[in-house]
View 1 (cartoon, protein in one colour):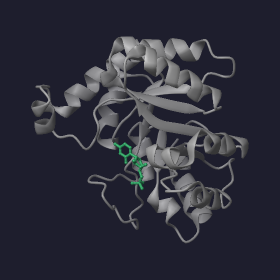
View 2: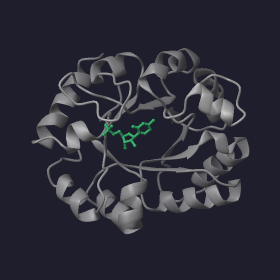
View 3: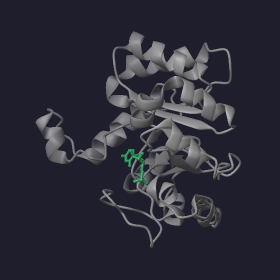
View 4: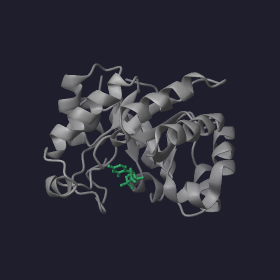
Length: 234
Ligand code: C5P
């Protein structure tokens, strides 16, 4: 198992609320994810501050554009000192390859680069409307194969997809899985949730956990419970 497999989703609307939350956590116990909401509100300076506090930051901006533009975005994101960042695999082979090359030429340690395959909010009929005749699992598998072929480090996927992807890829290929809940947690808007122990046993590398920790009375205690649940998987 990797060190610190829990990534806490910092889904806060302001830098102040996110920073107040971070004071309750030890960077030795978890990593954090900054997504579109917080990044749009707080910007790159905030990312630098969180990196400066000692947290490994997953910058979840899901870049998707022409190869040159994505390569540029990925290059400057790496300069912020983030630990991991992502692109949409549906941007294609040239876009993913250019992004990977841009990271290889950076000065500091290379951040992990992963891809989103098919958004878990999309159904088979959504894909059909977009002219993609495959079912979501088939499309996930195809885009994950392209992701690996372009030299990226893994994909974001639902726990339901991890057994299939673990048959396709070795443990080196990171599977980053949201939708994680303990039995006592509210599922919220997540349709299919999986427990932390099961998710790791099914092949996830990192678990993205938001509200069960961010909304907890004691975030540190909730995190400790998630950490012990994942530690029980050999
Ligand atoms: O609060 P919760 O644990 O549901 O947060 C999950 C996090 O993972 C959120 O930041 C959400 O945007 C993200 N995510 C997800 N499902 C995906 C991709 C990302 O829930 N398919």
